[in-house]
Image (cartoon, rainbow, N blue to C red; front, side):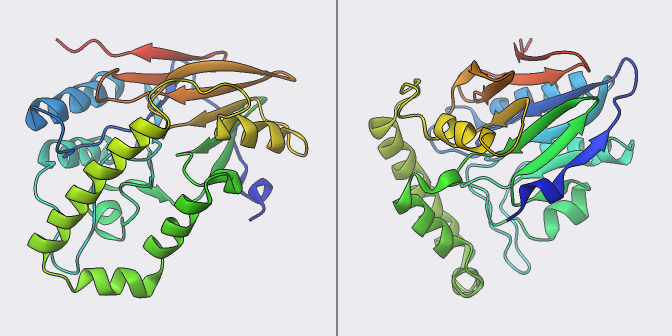
Length: 263
């Protein structure tokens, strides 16, 4: 994939901002109060919509999402309604598929108006270039995960899963998601692993050898981090909405991490 072909140049309207968030994991079985969890994220969307030029949701908004032909996962009505309200007002909402909600097909964009992205995206606002992605599978550093992702994105495998009764399919996927998160916490933890082990830092540095990028913005790692990569480039980890409620905001001059305080 030639990422350079995807660069889109835009000018930010005065007094408007661009917002980035990821890893909400709505419906995760480890969340004690799912409704309050959803209401908190919807409250953030409601808080930023008046100043938003665009909103980028960089993956794993749902802990599991699979659109059967005539069935969608139960719940999330507050989020769906808020997304539709925002896009109906003419504010673009970009939805990146993550490793937990990779099976978004036509229902979510047709019902809520979000723009779905399945690959990394490069955007340019003013004279700054942004590299946007969820962060899973980039650079081939995790061969096991890349193998699983190849299976999950295979049309025949998706067709087979779609013929499992939703009660069984969603139940199995929820159990898989819980076990996967527990294994990742043991293997990686929710802490920075160091410049020589953080695969997204390695990937960003490798990308900079051929492509100038001012800001790499990633989710996936559940770490809120603003890291200087040198060469005038920075890497932003967006954190998560399970424990941190963090997001990033671009005001046309500066990209910074913020924490949402929910009343």
